[in-house]
Length: 83
Image (cartoon, rainbow, N blue to C red; front, side, top):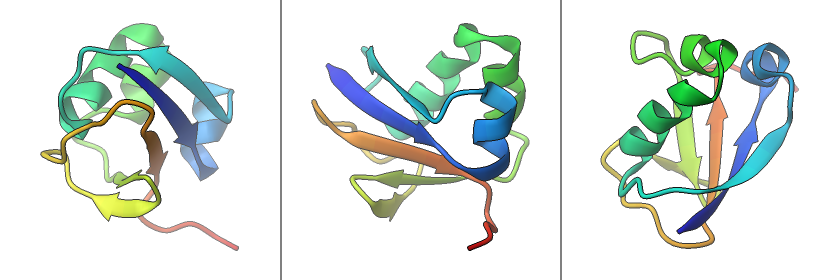
């Protein structure tokens, strides 16, 4: 399935891009997060499981167990962001 990923705040700065589109076989947000580790060292460090991180699926806050759907928009951001 194809998903659209957006990165915000310090995660965007570390990875160096505001977002990306990719094909994935991940079934959940947690699986997608883990799969993104392979994209680069910056992805692995910024999205590591030990780091505080919030996720949204189609602009609704979500947990790692949330199922992905084809064409979904996934957002990753730190727990506190500025305006």
